[in-house]
Length: 444
Image (tube, rainbow, N blue to C red; front, top):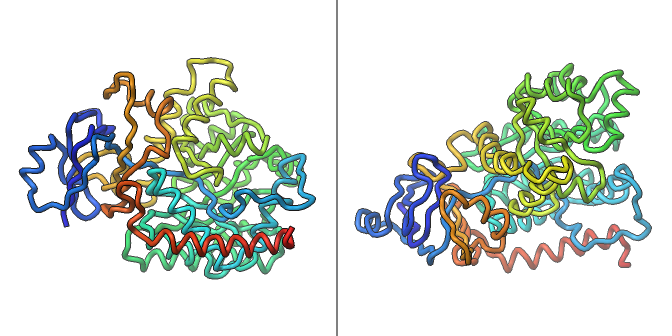
């Protein structure tokens, strides 16, 4: 069926035609057919299903290059006696305790909740990094069902780690393999698989080699998020984390390294030379007090740097705002960070989506993926193709999104989620979150 989204200002992010006032976008299936003036396209496609943008801003949907769905039920949670003073204590006291109690039902509904929030924020594609050591087998299938129901395109992986013993680490490898096979059989076009790894300091030589032996695709791993990961690798292996990963064949153009706060110049050159992507997560890094990723040096080294939220939020505009000011703050230079922020969030995230799903992302143009959003942002200052980025960073936020289209499917229209029964899902989310909190806090 053909659809037409009309009666808005279209910002295409296509240099050949950056802006169309009083414009419209036409798509069929998951591909854009045509862009142009509203009246002309309404007359040309009289049978198309119509969606009124009501004078809003029409633009490409957002992509989140590093998310953590399993953290969803931590919102508002306070575990008795958990008062971390460093990042390792944050992991042990919060996240590893959560994932050791997260069963399949909790995993499924944390997926639904996160994906609904993505839709509400205009995010239609995510790269998620999952952990649920309570119940590993089948956990990615639960997230996949939530992805297909909600319509959020999802590249999923399971976090391999030896922190809970060899049996759990082998189950983690197998979960990635099982999901990889599921993706090859899936016809929805919404699923892709990577092999997840927690971090170098929780993965033995044997486990890393075992995963590489059995997995023939890209890896998604946390790298030097905290200084402990860097120091552990130096002490135990006499090399940097990127060097260790390269030795095991983990790096490459299909792999993603999250965070990369503590790198040497040679590490950056190694990542660049292997075509490995890095994903920056500014809010999470600040919240965990781990340090600041030197984004400028990564760009100077030629590394493809994307932007994620690390589960901190599902609103990519929030992450963009923080990325911009953090680069300025870290470098003590008010003119830095602008170009890098938009390159990460819009250009490079689109490139990562293209690598793992195929097709053209991040632009409204004929043949590109029909991932389209509408914002009701109405500025009181001039807005045009030359200053839209300024309005994105200093005016617009995720709450402005009114309509979200993913893979050509209308997921939300006029702020109503239409792909799933949100009220029913939210009821079950609250029930599953309550179960988790009872396990973690004992009713306190």
